Amino acid sequence: MMKKVVIGLSGGVDSSVSAYLLKEQGYEVIGLFMKNWHDDSVIISDECPWVEDSNDALIVAEKLGIPFQTVDLSTEYKERIVDYMFNEYEKGRTPNPDVLCNREIKFDVFLKIALQLGADYVATGHYCRKGTLVDDDGEETYQLLAGVDGNKDQSYFLCQLSQAQLSKTLFPIGELTKPEVRRIATENDLITADKKDSQGLCFIGKVHLPEFLQQKLKPKKGVIVEVPNDAQQFNISVPKFDTKTAELAFHAEKPSYSEADGKVVGEHQGAHYFTIGQRKGLNVGGTKEPLFVIETDVDKNIIYTGQGKSHPGLLRHTLFVHDKELHWVREDLALKIDESMEVMARIRYRQPLQQATLYKTDFGLYVDFKEKQSAITEGQFVAWYTNDELIGSGVIS
Image 1 (tube, one colour):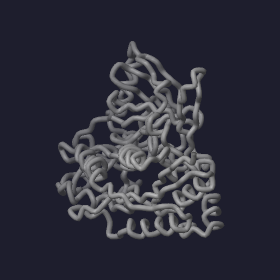
Image 2 (cartoon, rainbow, N blue to C red):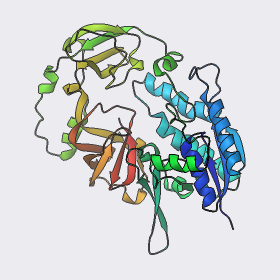
Image 3 (cartoon, one colour):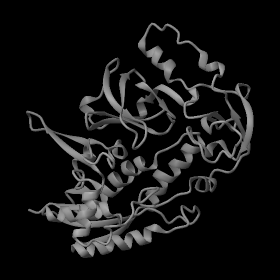
Image 4 (cartoon, one colour):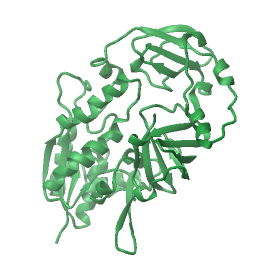
């Protein structure tokens, strides 16, 4: 019996080719376009890309001879993604809406709709792969593997997926490179063959973040403080701890600042609009090197900055993930208390993988990098790999 697959047709080339490949492989394919936004109280963008995207998705579906419909997920998207974004920024954290969109919308709400339509699987145009391990009892364990195209690997964005979600998911273009995908689209006369890759929030489009945030988070004038590179707190020598955990806790601590640590060099419109590592939008000149945000204090509404990418305030070896925000894609590999594991990890999409050691404690997980990392940011996701398999992730505390 022919297996049924519901694919999220976004109106882009990746999902278009994914649908084509699934049909070629003998699946019964249904295309669904997710409409994720129509809240008039918050303007996401001056453009309206979803109308054009849904039209392109419809044209592709007609070309391939597959059924197509639009599903309105805007209520769920607002509750689970947009409201979450506002709440995180208000707390001085920096969320990653694309990771959340995959966990909460594409592979939860959308997946449930697909299953209600009788689908055996959902499919997306992500550049990643799915592996299956079978034990002696015939039990299957699913792997989330990096895409073959190293320039486009999107496994990081799927770092919060579960075994249950992976069991129902297909990634048709994971073995292909972007040029190969465009070639297939061109050869099959798909309208999306030369279409530029979408930017911004998934299935919504470009977002000018400061303007977006100002619609819900009101401007609040505060000061910008420049902290010199040789500030006293960076001269602290690491004490001799008896336990590894205490040493890690020390390294994971963010430097704390006060206005006395530097000088006021400007004003801002709200600390909650800024994120660690940010350079643009400070509007402070006259420095030898560019200023970067090294810390935000949303309670006192102060932004702390430092000159240059190598400012000590930007660099840390260690981060921490609380148990409640710790996720294992491979539950069978989850560390027990006091266990450790050598991994490769990244703290943002496209960052080259970095050597790190995981240490599990009774209240969370430390990720200790071999080399100092720049702009470790609360609210972002850290993901860890063994070889080309993403095995777990967590929200940085």
